[in-house]
Image (cartoon, rainbow, N blue to C red; front, side, top):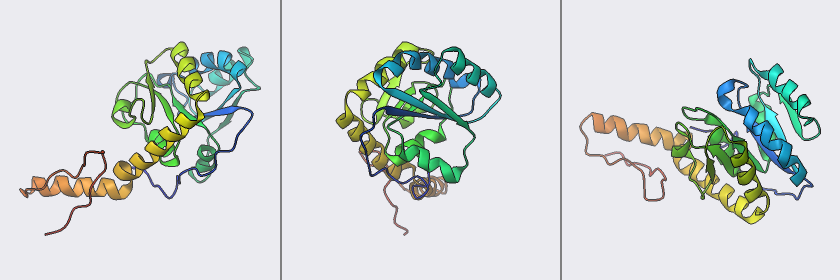
Length: 214
């Protein structure tokens, strides 16, 4: 679940000279960051910058790759950021990107959704269960920098669509993935295991309904 108070919905969409991508992840091979950096070689010419936040065993390799591709003016890597400061970076971003080659769940997706950001992510692992394609973001094939370029460009040129996706994500995060919603879901599951005739509390919009005690 996600703490919606720690990651409040973004309220101010100020017009910036550059559209800011945000990626928050461990710097390890399965995150597919090399494909994101390859995409940035083209995207930088379209007024796009990337904040790449995180640490890991491949941090030095990623920093070297940024220098080799001459991306220092459009890619910023501050390293590890504390949870208390992380929300500030979500608030200042325009699009969240997760180019993973494999992913079990993706807590950072919930944080981005709670903030009201549109998401571009690969259709691997549990990601398609969280991100609704064309509603809350765009799902793309893994290991494809051209797919990243196309997805980012399609949202860069459509600020209204970005805002609509962000609104959808913020509502979905609060309705289905907030701690209160998760607790309600577990309550229903336990009561069903105890033999009670309790429907799972998911309505037609994917929101978790509050259960009433008997």
